[in-house]
Length: 163
Image: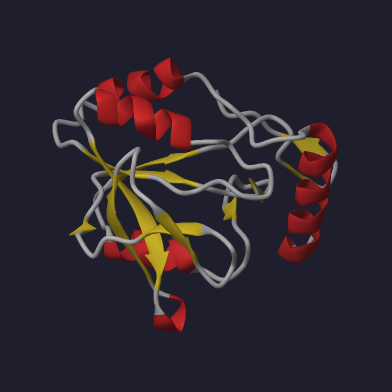
């Protein structure tokens, strides 16, 4: 099945199943960070849209535990960089209506919480199609990434879970 069709099907299903963005247990993220023995403390997140997993609450908890937090800002030519973010910061809406930090303090995350629409049968990430995260991840080589997958992400008639 073509990525664009998978994308549309998953977004439609999320809108039907979830009224708001999806919440996950903060302790699972902390367990993944500890399991990967990350000593650096810069976490990149995203501002959830389209009924995605709400990582903002997770980022608030991580900030309270001493982690530096950053969110993406989109740039020209489908590029994206990460900028310092704190719980009380004012955000600005970008051209897609997604909140971004106002600060110009750029950070390189050690761990990146990656949004996704779903994934295909080979567990390849399916995003929104513009490639922002693909290019950002290529710039952040040798970093740890935590894809926020959830059980109704699917391709065709198959359903997959991330545990």
